[in-house]
Image 1: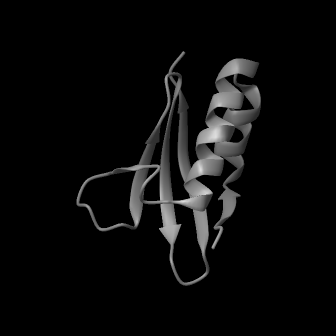
Image 2: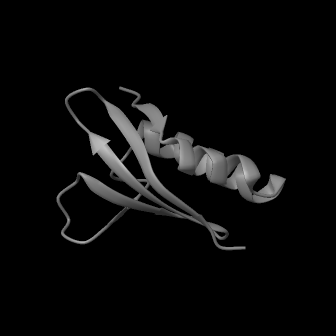
Length: 81
């Protein structure tokens, strides 16, 4: 089952402001996470399967995986480039 992606306004603004190549790479990585949240991400802190990190060459995203509602919320997004 595919998870639904949600952003807070700040994270969405950071993603929209990223250079095209970095934004596209992040978009593809987020799409992978929506299909396999655990396999496409890394543990963040304690490996509880809820808070996950998504790292690309130019971005770091902190994600909240909601099993009940099948959502992934981007809590924080940092452009590393």
